[in-house]
Length: 201
Image 1 (cartoon, rainbow, N blue to C red):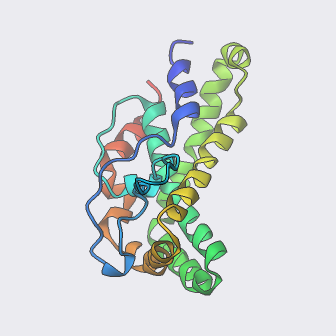
Image 2 (image 1 turned 180 degrees about the vertical axis):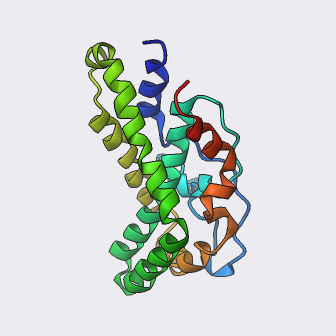
């Protein structure tokens, strides 16, 4: 099917959409959330994958391609939880505070999170229509979901490459970051949200 190609591209490139972001207001974070760090000149480290969380803070225009725009949005939505999990694993002392902060964030944004997660049902239905092509490409909806979730590893690496002090500062700032307008994703990412709500067309 003609529209299947963007879906396959989403599966292969979901994490590759970081935008330049304005620095956070909170000085405790000591660096931009999730922006890739430059390696020192003497050490040639591979550049980490772009951070979905940093992209969530940037204003991005939708392309009008449902599958691309859904890829942008779902990784941003999931990044909010991924940050809490990554920080809790790395710094157990932040776990209770950050878990509570995420639960409070869900009080205001949980219905939006459920709506965007529910879009996988739309993809599932569309994928069923294109089952012959899907089999030929060898990619299932479950594999697509797994590739979206693989973005979490890139986000963790993005945090670690800046060093433990910066990483810890970001994790300490997490509850305050959740209160910013950028993390009201339904409104800060309104263009992407509009595109996704229109569905495949």
